[in-house]
Image 1: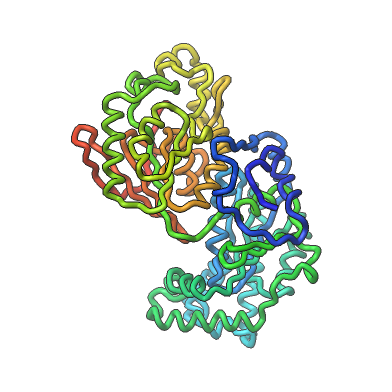
Image 2 (image 1 turned 45 degrees about the horizontal axis):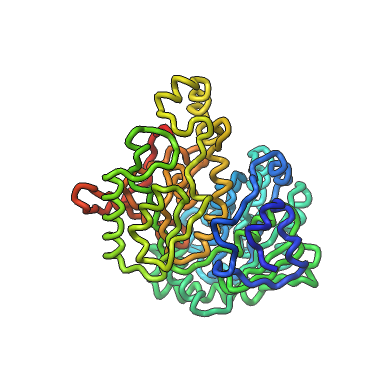
Length: 484
């Protein structure tokens, strides 16, 4: 019944063979899974993978307001784009605000606008949904997209039938994600943290007025809400996410993309936590400008590792896990912070990009011996694969189980390498794939990521290995042109 990483060996088109039609499933917690270093992931960027996403997919959100639909939409979009599936979110609320401009009656739509008795408002909302669907069709057609996320309440069967008919007419495959929540703490938190700061209310009402109005809006939707049902909706494909992922109900999943969506949704949570990312300290090969290898730390590298241990002595982080690559330089760095976790977990998936025939060479050697390879890599650094080695695209593929685990965990420190951290940062910052090989990840720095509902906060700590001190910097992720 559980989705685990071993499913990946046979490809995601077969993932759902372990979930029977209409199965209720609870999320895994990671503690009972196979050890991280033994997990394997199939390469998902071959021709077979491309074939499985040739049918355009529409992900249709369903649920009352303040149930996390937009959060799920954005997070899912980020994940699918990161694994190479062209995805875009079409939020009907944004169309409504654009349609009405600055009109108080619609742009700052109060609860009455969402009343089932307000015929004019229903007409406007239906028109906005139609426009979003039309734009979605253009994106999936001439726009070359693979997946569109239709982010709206879609609370009635009539509205969902309209969406299904539209998609079937265009040859799109439909999948519904219904977010259900009866946990009042989660609902109140969502209203307070997100909705009262939405464009519908910001600058137009006080926080208390916005909260009161939004609660009335929810009641208006409740009056007409028809939840999805495996009997009435037996011909549809859907997953019900219950109370922010405490449990799930999966029904009639079809195809590769839908399987990937289910896999992802069952591994995310909303609990507050921080993720720390650092490269190993300077290694002997770093000092010599050589690629890859498995050399130990230099004196400066050891100083950084010691300073890193002192940093976490000051942080006092609870429930901390340490993940490390299997390379000597990373292990030596992680050993200095080992006292802050029960043990160090070594992941083969966190090893540096395999430079193939270029392993151990200096960058000057590579340019002189392999000028054609150097030219090809300069032209397309993301897709370029070292002879007998890897590309950044390959690294993203093998890092997918790492990302899933990061989504499931609490506080984690990842000690790895430049290409690895670039791929992880590219995911959390939702950067275009072609930018990933250029993300700046200097030695002797630590990145702290704090995932939020709609973005990811970050703090960078830069270490001075001579003094053992560090400085805190709040800055945007920069691009750089490094040889790796």
